[in-house]
Length: 84
Image 1 (tube, rainbow, N blue to C red):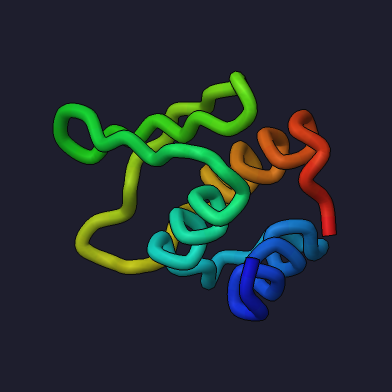
Image 2 (image 1 turned 90 degrees about the horizontal axis):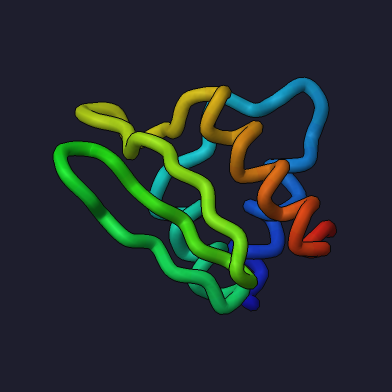
């Protein structure tokens, strides 16, 4: 995991929930942790990490993921033990 991915991980766990996280940074973090990001129909995205999955929608046309998606990714990271 590089420094940018570490900063993304720390940002996900900040309070209040951040609203300025770019989708590319979150996807890069998941891949660095050994997970997969699978694109489905439309904007659906399935994130698989350590045999746990979560489904969200990728943002469009903006780059930042919505607050609910940050919360879902945070819960996924907590369940897999990947905390800053």
